[in-house]
Image (cartoon, rainbow, N blue to C red):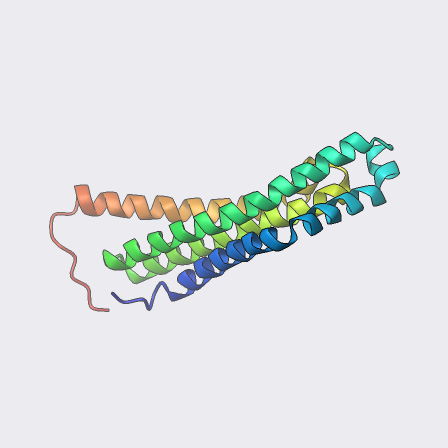
Length: 174
């Protein structure tokens, strides 16, 4: 198999997987540090953002921890899926630009979407709301999810064409 056209997308996907794995390792050793950081950030703005309501601050801090777990899981899962997208595109000898597009869009999507949840989790306690945190960086989620989705659609349309419509085998020199 020729990796020439998918190498950058594979690298991005591997970074996403390693990012998610590092987060998981960090959870194992430092879960309390994450949670304490969220509580401290919420306490710093308790009067301004939470109107002195400690239960609301605690709720947002707990949700921030959930966002960390989402970052971990999305990065790893989408990274693996992106690698599969890339390998299918290269293995079935899709046109080189299509291989590259699917690979890079999948890799960027997997890395960006996990990053979105990480950043939102760290921002939420200090902003007083998970909604405000997500809104402030929503473009990252939208671009990342759209990139990943476009990669998936391109892969499945081309795969469907190859399986159900194309009559002769593809022969391509790479």
